[in-house]
Length: 116
Length: 112
Image 1 (cartoon, rainbow over the protein chains, first blue to last red):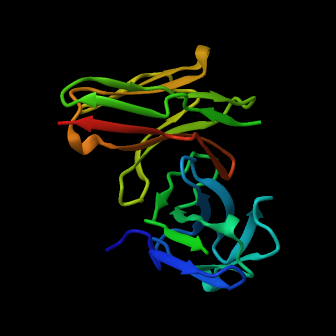
Image 2: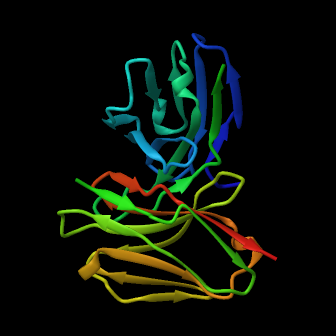
Image 3: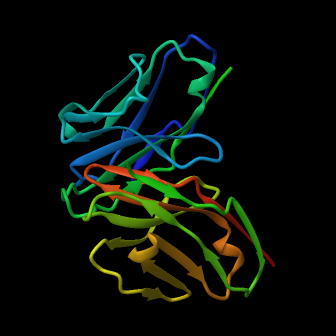
């Protein structure tokens, strides 16, 4: 399978716990994005990486959120001290990063987080 | 500021009917890209089409067609002879720079 892979598909946690999600992009893609999607809404940008460098972060990404992409391959998104408002689908996408040319994003199936 | 509006929250049609999904966007930029993505129940957004701001030519791909009109800032999507497999949430998106701005989506249900 050469698509974007996300793990786990579902995560249920208690408020205050830390959670970590993983994304494996398409192997030749140098850009990786994280989005958050809540029910009835479109995906909202969180952050993106060009290779291993995190180049942009949304104001939605509070200090409790951290993302890494070591070696420019897979990425992890960690949420510390989860809150009920963090409950959402977290989507990962990757692209070839052809900047300025309307790059097409390839999405994974997402990780559905439920904070109790 | 960039904004995408999909006023239709939910649409239901009977199989084989045609259906048009509306998308209106706002941007002050002259160079931008517009997209349509399909999100089936499995959750993965699937790319359907990309259009740049300098190309207003309409496009047809099988049962799908897109109408891009800069004068009205619209990028509408029509499915001809709808099928049950078309049931999904469809998102219109505007790309500028490194970000995508998605609309709130239109949930399409095709009734057999």
